[in-house]
Length: 178
Image 1 (cartoon, rainbow, N blue to C red):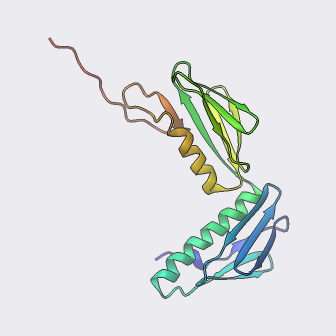
Image 2 (image 1 turned 135 degrees about the vertical axis):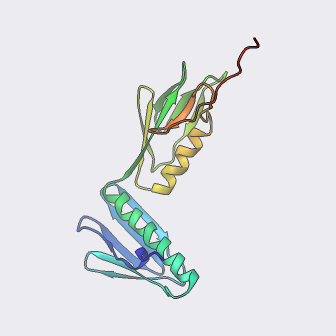
Image 3 (image 1 turned 90 degrees about the vertical axis):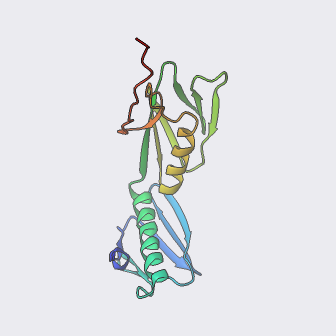
């Protein structure tokens, strides 16, 4: 059984937290985030910490309490430090460039792909690497997954869009008859 849901989420004096009508607003140097708290969960905001109050004796209260605590922690970390993901383009002629709030990808198709980035996500391209950054961890992961879906890595040559540090299990190709 996880006891993480019972721990309070600490935040610094740089972070502003407000809670009213089951809506939590966390704002900091990287942006502002809102979250609607479910009815069976309550929050207690103290001096530099947010405590999640739920009925941890029940299955629903325990699982939802831990999840809400993790979401609030990600909000606090996001508005102070932010999150980033790096995608690597592997393939001859695969390129990317940022133009305004859109990412233009050249991935070997007959046309370029123009991906419109959400307002909270910023992209930076250096060579074959695309670095996405945002204060919203969930949105950042969703955007990275959508970009990766255009050219998922293939197992024979290892070409495609990979997350940085990802290992592709390579398959052997066909062998010629003797």
